Image (cartoon, rainbow, N blue to C red):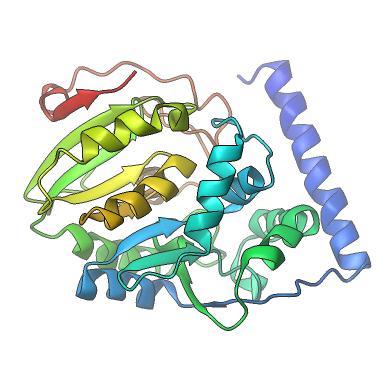
Length: 300
């Protein structure tokens, strides 16, 4: 049963969402820049066909650009500047992915619609400042394929498309120490091999130089998937610049777990760190021998 502090936090959170959603509608808030964002299908297809690297931007990255800390990452001037650099980059084989929620919000469920109205009301000026109006962006939902969508009909198809990225590839997973991507599910069962670099679950950017140094020791034929919050956004870009294919894959494992269980809202997964769920940072121990054999480095 949830404790009183968690219940109070949820109540305040949803009250805040409703209030800013109301203000957004009443004042008819509009973005100055409405970016062109390609579909999930086209984004995944480009990654598969051209072996592109990917950096993804969501609400957390934008808050950090605005020098606001998020739940699992403290803000810093260095991180803000690096995120701006990546957001405004324009490299041939590196995709900058952003949300497609600037328009057609009806595709998303009630909570997601309200969340994005709240976000744009408070932080929309940051998107306006740093996005280019005549540029094509790719879709950050390429790895967030389930929980926010009003209709779940395409979710299974999207996951099948996504798995094509690592079909018969040697995978390196750079992840938070308790994220445990693919453990207990078949998300990466079509990869040739899996190795892992474990990093701090929170404030990983404070160890950025060490993480990058370890990653640069890897064979460049590997496909690197990174689930490390905003650190992944920057790391995927830097690894691309160093000759790797690196993809900021974000919450893909959590989304896949929710898809498998048919979850209606964000819920915790007992043996995986889920920052978006109540008590999601309380993670059970595991004794999966195969998982521990996959670990190359553990950065504390």
